[in-house]
Length: 182
Image (tube, rainbow, N blue to C red; front, top):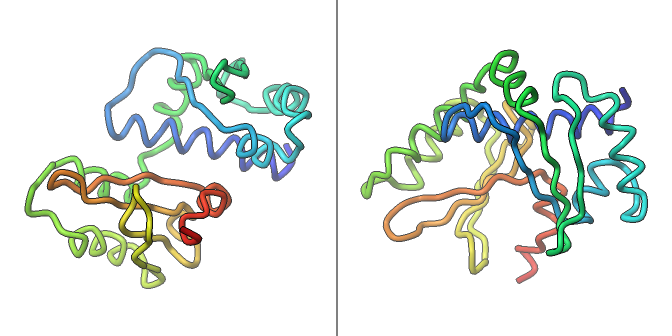
């Protein structure tokens, strides 16, 4: 499997695992939605090449089963990972300690939780943490590991009704949001 497809496979696994940490395992298919530009970039193709590139990727994505990729009426692509793919992730992919601890902290829904508490989790796992306030209607803070360890995602946090929430993006998807340009 080429590096682009390996990255795409790992991205699907990461999203499924994140969901399993948050809400537990479900023996059902998993539906994941992607804007066309994001899916095209993940597959290493242009928007017109998504169906063919996905078919080639699907043929090589061991463990995730026979996935389906459909263009929805809202213009988003839906990738459906069958139940056997969700089962594979549960059985073969351990919970990443950093992500499990972060989700556990945020899942407490404490009103006294602060960004310093969140940052303490990041700093527990690395000395290479970038944190900056961002100007966005949706998010207040961007935090990530500058060396990509223990993961290379961009975490965007917001304080909403007394709770801290987050969204996790790949670096490319975060850049495509143009948050820092607002």
